[in-house]
Image (cartoon, rainbow, N blue to C red; front, side):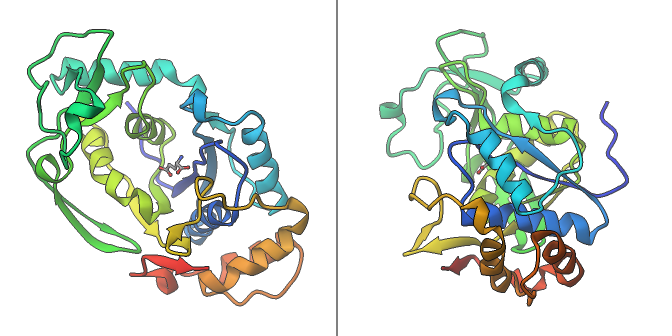
Length: 287
Ligand code: GLU
């Protein structure tokens, strides 16, 4: 049984598909400042779950970049690539509870469906040539997001059944992130609004695994020409030698007036000034 820590614990969980860019530095910074505001801990987890998408050297580059920006984590870094046993155990637990089924639907078969149509729900026998899906419970779910306010959904009809292990055997993000956040005792999840839609599935998985859900805060992401700043959109890698300038660029988006100084001292000052109020109810931060 996992005991929730009494103290706030948050994390930054980058996927090492490339080096940090301004958008991911913002994610690191908001989660860090929230942890500091609560006098809590801030951990880093490398989400190298998907080997083909992992760029060699990116994990180390991300950690060096965080250090260059004085974003120092409070515990050993966890790597998802070393967590297969934990994910497999979670699959077995969900399977024992009758919440999984084996799905052989092709992409083509599912094209045109907004949510998974439930085709393979009756297939309850494990098979190696199939993806594993978690059957979305027929319940309403609601929570309050720190930045985005009241959220509500009917999981089964709005989102449908989610893949927890892919047909190629790789564990899916939705499962891994919940298992890790539980095992690491995360109390608060602070991340970009692009992940808000994943949250309902993740909350359902917490409940299915018998764990309490954490608090959520989905902040507006940086957009450029209408698109989220991301590695897929070729956001330029951060130059760690420009750490001061990089941070200076982000302070105004966070509603902070910080004087130019060393990264360490700027972060101390930012931690004093930071309040989530300035980001509330905004969905995007145009570059
Ligand atoms: N690894 C995810 C990403 O880089 C973030 C996952 C999360 O914060 O829940 O987009």
